[in-house]
Image (cartoon, rainbow over all chains, first blue to last red; front, side, top):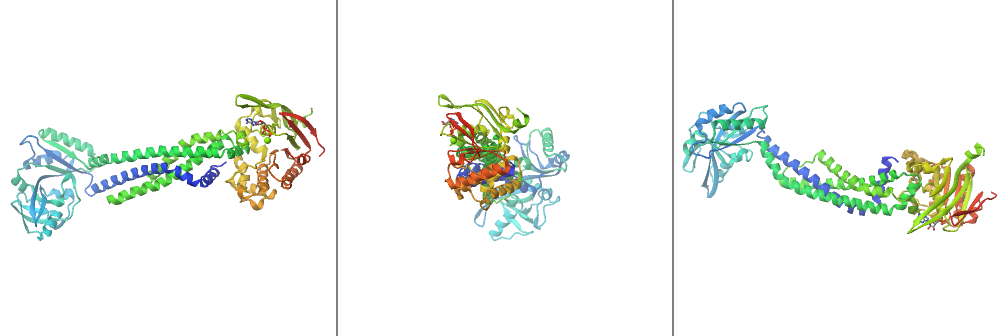
Length: 390
Length: 236
Ligand SMILES: Nc1ncnc2c1ncn2[C@@H]1O[C@H](COP(=O)(O)OP(=O)(O)O)[C@@H](O)[C@H]1O
Ligand SMILES: [Mg+2]
């Protein structure tokens, strides 16, 4: 008998007992659904993370500097040497000194960061200006400020519209505004939010706050392997600034971290998925065993008209697989729906990939084969004499 | 014995015995049965209930193996054959008709009749076309899409006969085919067998309790308690 004839027959038999069949499938539906949801959510998180770094480029590295002993830190005067030393791996290097400040603005407590940096920073972070200009290499000690978008908003809320030429009094210091930034991607890298910052020439800030550089940001030169470049740059630091802890972070590491955080969800869904699939498989096995018992006479008749035992086995196996596949299909829909709900509330773009769907389908087919095998063998062992006597 | 005669022998049974394990006891149900059937014969088997008729038919139809003795179909010793070969012989050379019709309840008449051809490996379309033609031949052409539960007993048995005949077997084994039908409908089924026998020369073996049916057969085997007690040729 052809495989199509077998499939047709299997469908007919399943339709004849559809209520019972659907009930038996709940485990497979939930199991396949969990697997599909798990993989889809994982895929979407990865995609979202990558997308966020895409705006800045995955070649952007941040180096957090910490000097456990006093006077071991990196000063502004060391910058030229560092830039030169890192030149084999990094194209643009920009330092930053961060000084957070709380102050009152229009009756509200505000937290801003005074971020001392250099002209390179604009290119490095691809910052867009809304007005005025960015700091330039000639502004070294000037108390100029380029205002982040959230800072400008806070001032606007307090009734003060900032523009190039405005002056700001923060923490007892006077800055003149030379430019205003467009909104930048949040949590730019290294944890500083440019939107909540005033960008100030590093020389000016180091005079005011003492000169230890908190972090460097850099772009890996095109064509270099990221991880190797980071390692080599780290060795350079260890050699030339032994008293300094240089902690590198790269987009790859951040992505890895996020995926680490996803593991709990993955484990949970994976556990639910596997348990449900086993329960579902046992459900399929059970319903197929019931079916074999109920259809003994039919099996006897089939043997009498010339079915081989393996024809009978194949028929029942195909029936089990189709049953499981129907569960798998419903599970795919359920899993995609769950992923959609998560994407909706997380504000992600929703997508389900073909490999995930194929895997979900494959898993349910495998369950059908595995748990359908025993009942199919039982069916093929029916004694036609006894089956036809009943 | 000359060659043409031995070629003409479709079935040869020698000392066929069959035991069943029933609880702790082994019961011998067939106690040594020997007879021959020539190709093209029409014969009836009679005997009291429990005398072993169905057991004999299962062995003849290759659904069961004898505990002892030798059985040949068209000269081939079936004791030597494995399960798939027996299945193939059943499919190609034997057609069963049962008292209880035994149609598959979820298939319509045409699909039921097509089934033996599908197990033979025929494409579904061809199998269905031949099934349809066979249903026409037994007068059920207008019911080909009916399920068994939408048919009367006599109609179901016609479909079952069509299923037995569709593969053009050389041997029809019918176990009380009219036992569940009233005598008029039973005779209609018998008429199909008679026509088949006369027109195609098919060998037909009918187990029956009905002496009226048996009287229409050329030869009668009578069984009692696992043995053939009478082995005579009637005038046809
Ligand atoms: N598979 C079996 N297992 C045990 N006993 C059987 C089996 N088949 C038949 N018998 C017994 O064999 C005897 C003959 O049965 P059967 O051949 O069906 O008789 P008949 O068809 O002549 O009425 C009965 O007593 C029956 O109970
Ligand atoms: Mg009987």
